[in-house]
Image (cartoon, rainbow, N blue to C red):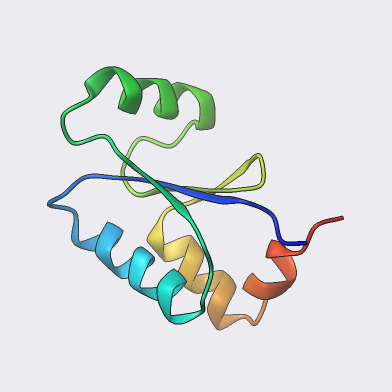
Length: 86
């Protein structure tokens, strides 16, 4: 079973679009949390995960960072391994 993936986004963020496109191309299901009009939810995510820009990408219960970090995992061939439970 794969770990859950959540991605905090805003509607105008090109890095959010890139990250979501990669996840879609890989067939990875994810929950998108749009914080465009919800400053409280964005602040909550920033405080919880220590990441100050969107996207904030969470795999399982761990923040991996943003789009660049997601693409680094993929480029290193580690994304699929990272998504596996256990």
